[in-house]
Image 1 (cartoon, rainbow, N blue to C red):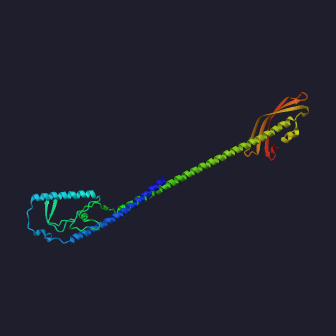
Image 2: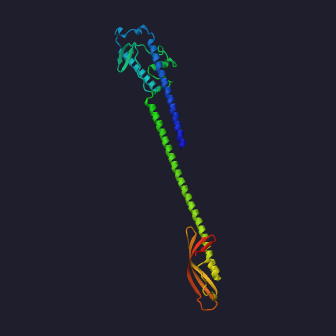
Image 3: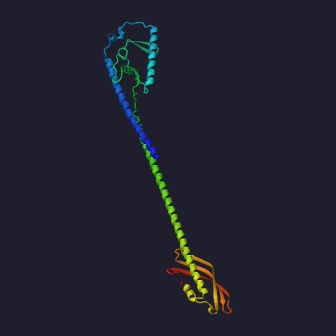
Length: 322
């Protein structure tokens, strides 16, 4: 979309440059045309005319004008005016040119309605009108009559405010493009920041999950080690090895009535283990039940009690703290 807008802006600038070049060309052609018309007018004024045409009209004796002649002349003049109007509409798209100045040699004037008939004036024709450079005599006569000759470019008149309006429109378009570019850049920056934030959150979540998994695995390892220590305590008690029991539990004193016992079965239940956050210490609470095998009768067959160990992790593993 940005590339399409850039292409449209470039095309618009190209069209503006072409329009300015065409306007300059039309202005130059109009200036040349005005110079040619001025030269043609001067040539017509300086051309010698017949003596009869130079005679003032007032010197001629007053004549009576035939009404039929006046009506026919009026019809002819109206036809000429319509022809000129149609030619102007067909070949000129610019503002109508001002009516040409009347010839200096005016003859008698007769009016019929709204049509003015000039009698005795020198007619303007290709024969007595010098052609302008680059145009034929017919085109010069038509141009002198106020009609744009066919086949020539129509000069255009440009208002002094049109260049300013174009420059203002171009500046506004550039400002709009710059604002859109800034908005796109800001949107891209916001999207990039949001993506980075999501990535950070995802990375943090992965780190937390990895840490939680690692802690769970480490905790499982420590629980297994403590369970092994408790199993060693049960095995030492069932073998009635007081030295091994004391090595595990420094608070152990002795097995009561050991000399009268043939064996002991130990069972543990209600085991509760609570590890510290750093997993360097733990509290172990359990219920131990003793089933005695007496060599001679007289003792209680079963006894039980609750024992709590404060465990500490060392380089040699878990030990019961003294």
